[in-house]
Length: 564
Image (cartoon, rainbow, N blue to C red):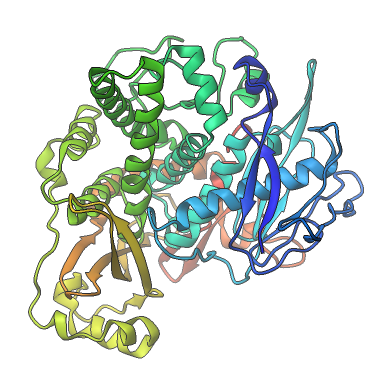
């Protein structure tokens, strides 16, 4: 069944500022097996709670197709009231699903998503309460989207496509790389923010109405702050008392990890970022990725102009090509990311491996990515980003990949027999994560082709010293691991990436000390309420003898105001 719904193009403020004639656009949902009032479907359920009483607002009614209509719908008031309950419920529902589909497309991951929690549905609460915030939370299986009042009126985070896509990006990444939820490496947590911001960007680039309006407004340029590189403009403007920054984060930046960089941005903010603050740290990575998008867009636009196209039309065509190309690179890399405590360099290698495996000789964008990661001191040199792809491993072509995917026993037996290949230390227990069978679309010079992959991830514990003082154990365990991508048809190893636990240890020390000093990180016994259930306002440090393990560190991303 197909269902037609209306969703926000951006947020109400940006719609007015960019001169967009319609605040909404239609979206046709095609992949869901059923639809219920709410809206509710198999994988997403909107629960519109009353913030004061806790009761459930009536959900928008589903209208199935009746002849001659071929599509169902969720009717909303006409003329369209953006702030009505039915529209908010429908728009947020459509935005979450459209974001999910972007990840599931054959151009991206090429498979159906699975959540990190034990349950089929992501719960979406579009009016969760009065607070300038929005977040994804694994424990409640939900996206919590809040509202708040300003002199200019009430701001709903659920009416911002940026924010809804960003939080959905967190939920998707949690399903793809669940170990990141408990990671204590600042760059691992910052990766969550950067990927969520890029998710919002790529969803914006799918809106023809928004693209047309922005490029008309800028004469075809994406160099300056626009609806693409500014994340959550309405929320940022409402919260900025100084009236300077018009966003929460800007992807078009020069933020860096270079300790000797004394430059500042246009607001006088240092471009040098502290290594233990995940939100600021995320801008180093997202800035690098966006700069590559700008370079590719500029190069492609100039090529089209040289072929005789009008500049704005050339820019629009180039932006469509650029967005699809880099979306494939950046989001497809998540499947190649090794489990556990990863760094920006690990993600960079995953991007390069995913693209190099499919386009061995076409490396312009890969060169730009390497240059940006070096320029921002994410790595010291390009040699740190070298990856091997499409490697023949003796005997691997005889492995029954269908059995490997379906059978836990077969997967554990394979991993145990191939410890050296997977980098698993001798005599160390390990975990084999659920295997993935994906079908991705590639675009070689001969035309599109589909490639099937088996993605195998194994994880194990790494023990290291802990320096948090007498209130905490003297050692801690962190998760590390390897991802192996195998070509289904040939048995060749498309990619093999393993985390390096020693690379980020000092950064973990700094983050944990700051969390302990501010009272966010507490021993397990102090993080339990009177009913014995974990309190959500803390990050728990579990102890077993003299070893500590941190649980739910990713929740610190929303324990402070403005964190999204």
